[in-house]
Image (cartoon, rainbow, N blue to C red; front, side):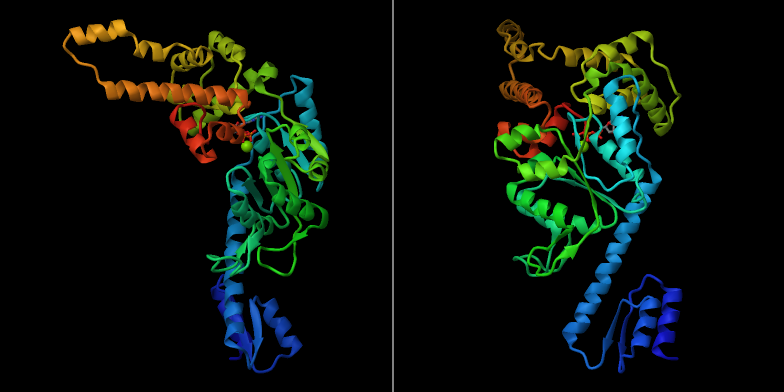
Length: 411
Ligand SMILES: Nc1ncnc2c1ncn2[C@@H]1O[C@H](COP(=O)(O)OP(=O)(O)OP(=O)(O)O)[C@@H](O)[C@H]1O
Ligand SMILES: [Mg+2]
């Protein structure tokens, strides 16, 4: 049995195992045949140990990449994105039309809108409706990582590019090859990275950190932001040339408070979705509840709405949720001053119960924290990155505190 036959049998039984061929002669025909049979590489004797090492490494990396792609593909196939675009107002109709027009092109699209308005859903829908839909959709949150980490995340690095770079890492752009990359919160990208991104947009190529040769990628770029990019350009924080490159087509997601007509449709959609998910009886909302849902201003937009309906289904009651909305509408019930109600404290003391000073301090700090965060989020229109900066805490810490204080739901 010769080498080629061995290869054929291995591939038949264990198609995922990478095989590197070693041969004394290197006839072009044999090499081509080996490659067609699925060999990862072909080395001619004599060869250096390093060559072999490199061939193994490449083979393993390719396999890891293939598995990851399969996984992403599977995930994309299973749950299609639901995007309810009611026709009730002009803005939404426009969103729908633009999606239809550009989905099946490679045009870069900038998706704008407040937090929770559905920007990511739009990006996923654009991908799913394009002929790239069988390929990966790769999302990168540009606000979640410090600049250097984001750079290696996006563009990858070569082994030895910096201390700690023990092996080559592929960037998200490479993972998204033939597919779509979604750059979320693009407004937070550092100027140095903006320059590198501009290069990818212009030439379709980039180099890994510490790498010499350029990597070509065929990736469709979608970006989203809840930041006013024109302002950022004015302030010199966002490159004007990149702004124009990204802003070929813009989809502006209106806040939910401006399209209340969509509330019944969204309610219906989420009621059905969660009833199914939690195996509960589907229910209809009372006219009073609909009234409350329609009049509330939904600062967290569709995400907040979705979570409210989820809670209704899980709790099996509308009452708790209605109360919660009432509380959100009047968040200024003065918890702190009730804590400091000296009359009540006096009564406690007179009872001989004592006062738990530590408890009071903790509770007061908590209430103050929640309020300040809510206020700053409101001022920054729920731009969490900006809010974190104003609060002088990290982005991650803010997300944690928001969750802890019930200020927004994590997904
Ligand atoms: N039109 C819609 N139809 C159905 N679900 C929607 C719609 N818009 C938003 N959602 C749901 O609301 C939630 C928030 O949407 P998404 O993550 O797309 O918002 P976003 O604009 O990207 O928010 P952020 O700026 O906070 O990242 C998701 O769970 C999404 O499924
Ligand atoms: Mg998003």
